[in-house]
Image 1: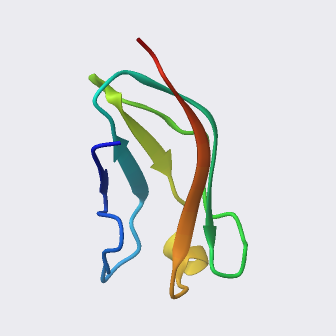
Image 2: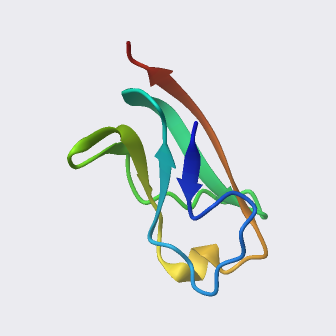
Length: 82
């Protein structure tokens, strides 16, 4: 993985609508989950590659109310396609 948006470890002032994971090769999501610090799932749908960029995986997030916690984390299985 090259980077994430928002950046790993960053502090944001408003809850993001999505997380984007950037890789150096094509990816395919197998199973990804984002949870808040209470263990509640905050993803709003299946992850998919970004429009026009098969190296970026977009994970949609639920509304800000579910994300209004001190922290959240990502856990997933992602295949890199050669």
